[in-house]
Image (cartoon, rainbow, N blue to C red; front, side, top):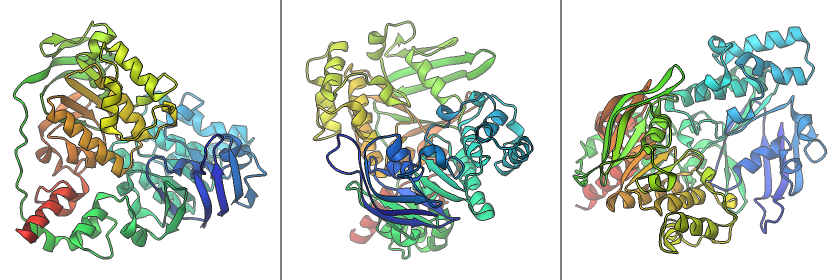
Length: 536
């Protein structure tokens, strides 16, 4: 159904191809996971399937991509509209109507499908994806998981037999992500739809995959069955890394399979010795009765929280629970109808932007929104000037996080990890004691997340207080000392990371699920314990 024949692709102005000599065949009715480091070309590979590469992106394509008998070199993306459904990372950005039912019907209207057929397909898709109860809802009022399923439904109603998804769960809480992946598995198994998913959080997809495609930073692409591919992949989810540490072969791909082998390992490890993380006793941030309303909707309801110097606090909860609204309220920039937020005893609300940055640095979900200059060095110079810092301050911060970055590059040409590091450096130049990050691991591979965790631990060790709103349970297990869980605008749990997430069915990391009831959270914890047992 999909064939890449010696395909290479180079963007205009680039020296090296992003894809090099790709030979692939994807049969009908498979679920395929596309993996690879940040910036390796996964999105380029996906966009080549429906001709967006090269017709929309520009660049030079060599070789042939044949989809449903059509060569993408000789057909425009519109010619693939009925065969290939493409859903990008931000479904809301792709919506063209106002309500769920209108969005499901829109593509069929463009294809001049008969009204009676349209009505039947809409009803079938609503039931298939479990969204019949929201058919009349405005798209902007839906949760992230609901929006993702509507976006998928809008291409299914058009009759697409190939579904291509780019990071479909990156912005979703664990439960919403499971719902989206379950819908994809049902499409493959029950209807024979071919589903191709690029996803950094491989732990959410790999156990369901029929095939794994690895895109390397050098442009090479390889493919194979999930188990042998995962055994050698340089990037891998926690359950696979745990298997490597424990010496299990073949490697398990699911928590269920890992638990079946884990009894001897659990007996060997026992209970973890929890090292007490020393934080400064100083309270940096104190928030009392913070309330945020949008019209009649209360997004944050009387929340109270505090952050100490040297502390990393994770803010978790399902999509729409109020995490982002709370972060913006803490900065003093976002709406806040009631309550107080003090940083070092100073109220954050009502201060000018430059003065506010001296109290709290905020890295939003779309970090690149804060970048507006043509080069990295210009961004750093502007940050130094706006923060009244010594020239070179921002550049030194950036160099400490990302070594060897070309300062003349355009910020939009950086990888996700490099761009995030630049925004962090820009925001930290003002020397704010408190740092807030909203979904910072979105779009980052496992190695980039590990590097970010090291950076954040270093900032905490230097005395900063850090609050991270995230759905990434594996990242929380690595970096946070405390976890706050929000639901319907309220804090429903607040405590040490192991106490809050280890026994949670939604927020427990893979290692905790495999080794329960012992409260192990990360592969590194287990590796260190095994080293002590072996050598000590």
